[in-house]
Amino acid sequence: MEAHSISQVWDQVTGTQTAPSSAVVWAMAAVALLAVGWRAVWQLTRNVVTIAHEGGHALIALLMRRRLHGIRLHSDTSGLTVSSGKPYGPGMVLTAAAGYVAPSLLGLGGAWLLSAGHTTALLWAVVALLLGVLIEVRNAFGVLTVLTTGALCFSVSWFGGPELQGAFAYLSVFFLLLGGVRPVIELQSKRARRQARDSDADQLARLTRLPGILWVGLFLVVSLGSLALGARWLLP
Image 1: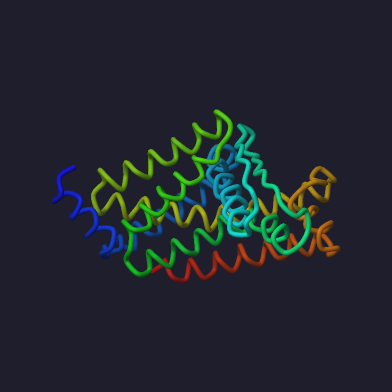
Image 2: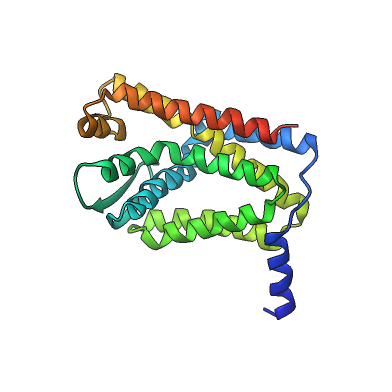
């Protein structure tokens, strides 16, 4: 790449871009809602939420100075992040609690960037985060999922014009904000049927001696709060 091209990319990443039209913003919100609400589509798009979920576990594990052994992403949209360290205490609690709130908080951070006009910076930040996750993935399906997602984000950020970048960025953020809510509801539904006895909420219940439903409630408050605030920033 020529030096001038590098300078242009840097200017785009650090600069601001014009937001899409109101019609495009509302259309992207509708598409994101469809991607989360339509079961047939959700079975595919939920993989992106799983990447964010497991990435949240991994990031907090590293910040808590736990030893990260890897991430696995499965074709049924489940995932597993393995770390070692103290099996109790604040570090373990924060690591276990990070998964279900990660997609919503990432979406909220993305909404803040978009509200400030940093569309290109958001896309490159997503690519960087996906690269970090890719390094820790330990199974073939996980590698394929993260590579596909990362390649799509990179292609839009590198080859796409301002209109495409803006639409894709808004779609991605709306999807994370909406996609952060549904897994929490699904979690409690499984818990009610006793199909998730080793879920994050139940692990947290054993770690803290607080009821699992309390942790599910916390996840839901964070996800709904992020959705409300993010929508306030993004919608015309």
